[in-house]
Length: 67
Image (tube, rainbow, N blue to C red; front, side, top):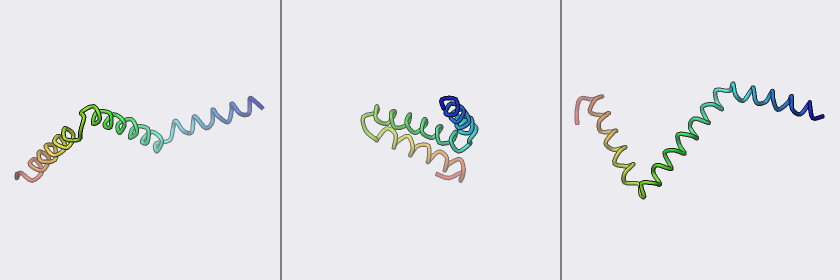
């Protein structure tokens, strides 16, 4: 019984490790968690909002060559 359970767990782990969807989800969770922690350490949302606004404006400037 123990061997069957171990074999099942090994097969499941191998399938999960090769799944692109699971890898993508793990990466998003890791990055999202880091972003949330960084935002919370800033004390409020103004630092992140200002940075996103600046990046968006710079991308628009490069993309459209306008301000």
